[in-house]
Structure formats: structure tokens, C-alpha cells
Length: 363
Figure (cartoon, one colour):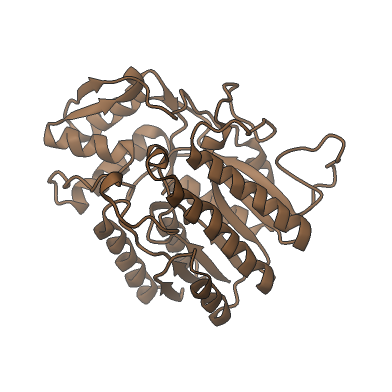
């Protein structure tokens, strides 16, 4: 197949594009390579994709532009006819959405609509996109299930991702475009994002510096390893969304429809406390952490826990990577990539100037 993967310079998009190339698909990547975090890491991912494409049966083409640029997106769709679109580009980051809200509107709302329009005109067979566990917001009932309400977001990042889900449904209803949304739960692994906890903790522990532990470490996350995520994304993309024959307008199920629309959780289904996560990093590095205990940050959920059984029933999704194993894989990659030396701290989001529609969502 020919697949458009947006955000392919980002964490998740890179891994999805790589997996598709390895199985022989043709991939068109689309990413503006902004500086929300270290562009050098994004460029290294792109170089790895170029190398893989040269060595594998898959063909690869890359577009460096913003998805909010209508002309660039239209030109991309005019040059290629896509069998699938996997949309993983977005402005990522929960806390930064409180500093630069308009960046999230441009990247997560405007760009999403631009891409939906392109899919409508080309009648793309299936549009799969990244949502987030953050849409559950003020919900505290665990595990999170797709039939729960998601109308109380705790920050703008979550609100924009929820808006994406709603826009997808409108296009599925009006134009019968099959759409599948995937709510990611704290993705981690090799080639991960420098603004996320695993990268920050590994860097500081390796350097002998303190790590900032919010909520005094008293929260848990459904940490989900990247290989498990990639398997679920590709399985979901391969299986085209259909109408739910059991859906009724008098009792509308929120995650399906009488349109070809569906939303799934995609998590590890095994939440880990932050303290145990840090311990796994310490063991992988062979060094103790210096923990700076801090209050809970605004917009942060206390805990996350995915019920991914619907995705398992639909496409056979079976996450299988224990946290210790996944953390060890990340640390091994980190030490190899940075030559065993602590990485230079990435620019903080507040120092960044370009925040357009191409940083991988949750990636």
C-alpha cells in the first residue's frame, strides 16, 4: 500500500513509518521538523528512515512542510494517491499548551481539518489518527473506557485532541470517510521525546543531577512501549472502520456510530507507579536517582489506566512489553545514541519559536 504518515520525524510517526517500510509498503512522510524539542534528534530519525528505505523493499518520499499549509497538503495529495492516511502529527505536550495555546489550535485543529478535507477530496479508504488519554480529563473511574464521557478536559491540549475526534466523526457522517481514532497512553521507548519523563530522568541520573518528581511521585501511568503501540496503529489502519450495527441514536455510544467511525484506547493495561518507573531507570543505568519531590502540576492527571479490550477484540491488539524490559531498551538506545555521555538538555518549549503542525502527537 501507499501510506501517508504525518509527523514521521516525531517519535511515534518515525516508528510507524519504519515498520511500514520494513513490511514493503510505500511511505510518504510529512513533517515540518519544528523546534519544540531538539531538531537534531528529528533529523537523525529522518536519516534513519532514508537509510532503511534505500535498503528495503519499501519506497519513501518526504515532504518538509506544515500541515496547516493548505497548498502544501493539496500538492502532496495531487502527487500521490494514498491507500491509507495515518495522522500522527500534532503539537505535543500538556504543560506547554498553557503557555502557547494558539500553537495547539493551529496544529491540532486547523491542520487536522486541512488533512480531513484532503482525504475527503481524494476519498481515502481509511483515515487513522492519534488522540490521547488526556481527553479523559476530570474522569477518575479506572480503567478508562471508551464509553466514558470525555467532555471535561484539564488542559487545552486535551481539548484540541477531543476536537479532532469530533471533527473526524462529522466527516465520517457527512462524507462516509472511515476514521479511526487511537487514544495513546504515555508512549515510551527508543528514539523517544526529550521533553518526556523517561528521557529527562535518564539524562539527569546519568549526569548525577536531580530529577524533578511531581506529585511527590504519588501517581501512576499506563506506560506503553513503542513496539506495542506501532503494532496497534498498523493493525487499526489495516482494518477499515465500519458502521456499528448496534448503534442507536436514542442511546448513542460515544466511541462508535452509524457512520464509519470508531475510537479506541491503546495502552498497556498495566499502570505503573512513578516510583517503580524511576527504579527501573536506576536499575538499567546502574545509578541511583537524586529525587526532588515537587507538587502536582496544573493539568496533570493523577493516574491513567487503559482498558484496551475493544481494540483487542477489533484488531487483535496484544501489548506484551513489561516496563522493565522497555525501559532497559530505551536506556540501551540512549547510551548508544549519545555515546554513553549525558545528552545536552533540549531547548525548553518556552524558548522554541516554531510550533506548527508536525511534532508527533504523544511522540
